[in-house]
Image (tube, rainbow, N blue to C red; front, top):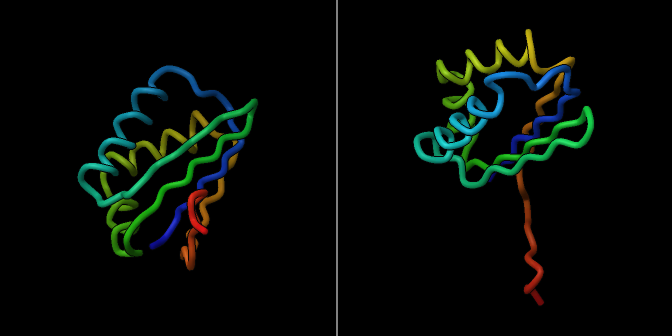
Length: 98
């Protein structure tokens, strides 16, 4: 399993941002194999973490036309800067694990 960590410095999350983010989250989960998606914004910092079964799933999602349009809006309108990290999840522990 892989995690994609998106960290951004917010410029202006203006009109269209919430509806675009909601639409893309649903598309990733329903059509591209995303296992889980969590995000939070505090002040001018945003972080989103999504989990994927493979790097091929991540690449397919990156190449999606709607996602590419949103990436362009992110660069031009919503974010001052951002960084994407892809990491392999080697292990995980739940709170009820011994």
